[in-house]
Image (tube, rainbow, N blue to C red; front, side):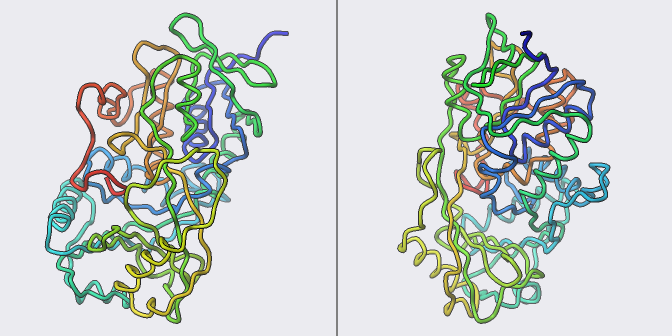
Length: 396
């Protein structure tokens, strides 16, 4: 029996993979397959805090985030589906810092955003408290406000992209793990699963924390990728954290805590530091009490009434982390027929519309709207790392 032939196969049906599949078909690929070991957005996308911001110190990331934000704000129109929903809450983004090295990095990043036409204002303590009445400004000197920011829902976003892709004729296979890439010489020609083989002119691999296993075992290319586990805690306090309150990034806290409204009244909070390496297939586990206590102390120090907060729920999320905490996008040196996107290090969801489009453009041999050269695989050997003013961690 002849193997199915596709123009493009996309491995990984998270937010980025679903975006890439839809964009590939929209940009002219005739036959597209989207395949995943689980279900749509069942992997790391389902664990995302789904924060949307353009506040980065790496200029290239600012551009990707800006392009993605423009998609989130007109989501149904972009997908030509009035029913498409991404769960966007345009509550804004408030980043606070002390008068120190982190604070200077905040100021420089805000200035960079403004040069790129983004509204990113430095405000005073009084204005910050008007935006976030719970804010304790003790020890703070710098307040950055990005009104065109907020958060969304990664599951809704991914499933909307998948539905739009299906409507255009993209084939979606769930619960079918890719065991290996098929190669002929230095070209990737398809994939192999337990169900059979599928050939393609181009494979886009966006398998997140499972990328290194697949790539290294199939073609022997070393993938600089570590799976890191990060803890998330939902707190509930007598005075709720309302949906109208901005996403908060506290650069003055020891853990560079980020937080946002969760549900209608709870506070989702997580450290913005390097996590700990883990097996990507390790099951969810309870967040240790010492981490909950440390995170709770830092939240309580910054937000009034949260010194009386209780823990509503906890979970962990996986980051696919590269040495510089920024992604690799595009081809791998020496190989044809393969495009990769990995190492999003906690940034994947917020950049997913733009990255899906860029990977589809590159796969189809079209000019990419944003240069992929800064995100090239070779940068690790060249010493051209994308480490921004904040160093390594979930800010970038």
